[in-house]
Image 1 (spheres, rainbow, N blue to C red):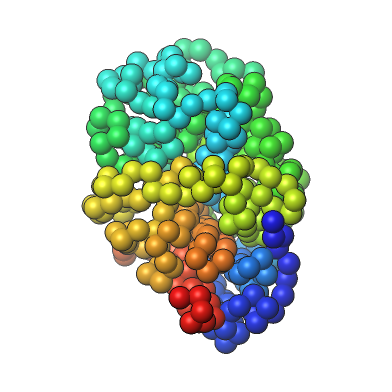
Image 2: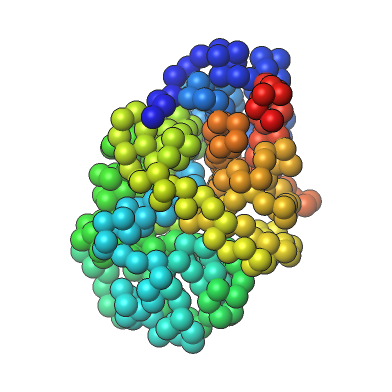
Length: 389
């Protein structure tokens, strides 16, 4: 049950020159026009060989960034939400193969009775992402006839109520379509079953046991001195307003996220604390929807989505901009729309975290997001040993 420790590239099993080049390139990206803020981390066999901060944290004050900077990590929330769901599964409080309406009977749209909980985890529910209509749904949730529950955020209540009345654009299980609504619903499902705020459950069952002391679901004023505040937002919504939800509410640091990744690499445990059974952790990072295609984040068709429970899984179909070409098949990862990413390469014992602020390129309309390049460089730095092949 390895815990992360800092050490030399040689102790981690990285080529020193190549892992140094990965850090150099990350620094160059912050000095150009790609991103104003960056904290990157790469570890192997539990040894952190690269943990580097570059750029600015508080742009209105020209404040330099530190390695413990707190980023809005957006959709890196989703693997954590999936972990919360699987904790409930292990405890017999929830089943993935039961209809969603058994737990949330207000869902009434076309095909709603066919949606099972696992469809939400794998983005095969048939719901379209409310963000296709623009981020304003987070900032200005649609009105509802009933007020939120006492332990439910207004945004979550509004978006769950919105989806409960929506028709699926595909039959559940037919196509993968990335949808923040799926994970907002899952976070609310955790809230209902656990009987407490979603963020409180995550903190109590995941963050605190793992020692992720700089992580929160939704904005936490305790972290304001370390919070990265760019001059412009990567998307047109103040991230402090996104709130307590299972899709995009995560604030965290590179080291905290590396702990979470290492927990999965260790088979569900970290530093003597078990979060998930090892078989559960293994099942979460397996492709759960073989042969299912999707439209990816950039509107391009991908023949096979390769999605586990909360994690994307590296397969033969490569998603443009979303993953490197060198990490081996079976590597699992996730990205955040704010310019963040994390991954686990179990074959080589590698965990990596890439935290930036990604502004939209005005020409390509693709975020200036170098996650795939950084993944490649870290993988290329793995020392080649014929005995491992």
